[in-house]
Length: 512
Image 1 (cartoon, one colour):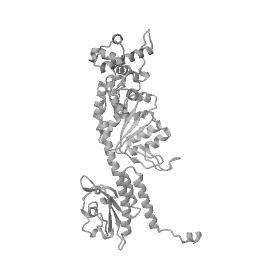
Image 2: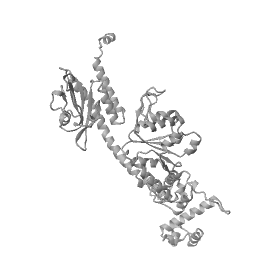
Image 3: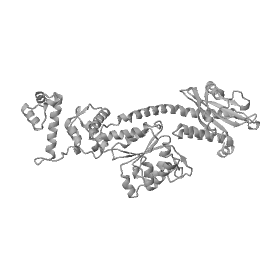
Image 4: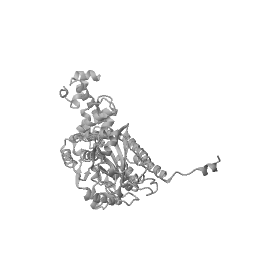
């Protein structure tokens, strides 16, 4: 057969077949394209209106805890109908799940097993309804059902309809099978996060930190907008996590946006999403951070860096709880709690007119001020010990303590980078430490500089003396204050050791 003959003998499939194939393709795309299972199922139910022409529909799943069937997603069912519950074996839907076999009711008005629990159907002869229901099978076990209402057509062959619904149900089952282990993993992860950000794990016994933790406890369980203020490195993100995981929204998403890290040209798209073709490179629709945070919390870090144009759009979300995607005209309602943070002086920004006054008052509902580390010196040793344990475990080192001279150096330092700088310093020290203790020599050079050099020496002399004192104290701790044992341990003479002890004003009896 020639190419021209082959082309001339080809006949396109019927229009109904094309619609069916297109619908199945779109169903698979919807199930794979939405992060949220509920959103994917909702889109699938809407597609059933196109084919097979469903008037209404329901995707029903089995609740593993109660053993009841509930409506996970629906098409054009009233709100009260979506609350219906069935026992397995009860009604047509329950029978389908119990048997694992499909059921088609040509006219629901003539079927006594039909419970009409979600809606009273087919009361008038001219409104006759055909009801088709197929099981959703995962590993050969029914975990739910997919059902549709169709206009009754006498004598209609329902076999193609059942085959089509079986394919849709199989695609739903595949998504369920891959999603449920992921959901279990997410549940465990959220439990771990909740434990990690428990208030008891927020380290600090100083008066400023006790005040902060008391305020965090007050506001965590509310829906109130929180503005966290403080210098860089004070732990603003840690507090935001604690607020989320101790709220009623803990099961929802926690979405972070670093407003200083995103260029202004991308900020609106990142926050609110965009439609396909909204700008060059927008090849598909994209959900923004607010949309992804729906039902949970959005953390707007460094909010003081937002441009005036983005501030205006953010204000609308705070006021009306809705937004529009870039390139879109349809308002999208959103239910999120907003936690913002900044190290900037927003009051100064108000005076300079670089930050909107109305946005400031919308955000500043419950302000939290985190103290710098230099104002909570009592917490330095607690934090340092915590980081030693953390990074010794992470790097598989046997480091267990910090020597007294090293502690003195930590306490004298002014910590411009706050807790984040202290954490970095301890991690570095754990990595370079040769034995079980962190000595002064393991700390970075920025901590080695003495507060004031004496007239007879400079920084090098002070560092050598601090190094000697560090070695002597560590040896006394190991030998429980025995000068003779220290002499043998260090390979020196007792006269030299006692001279050094007097020079550095170290009393052996403190370590016995």
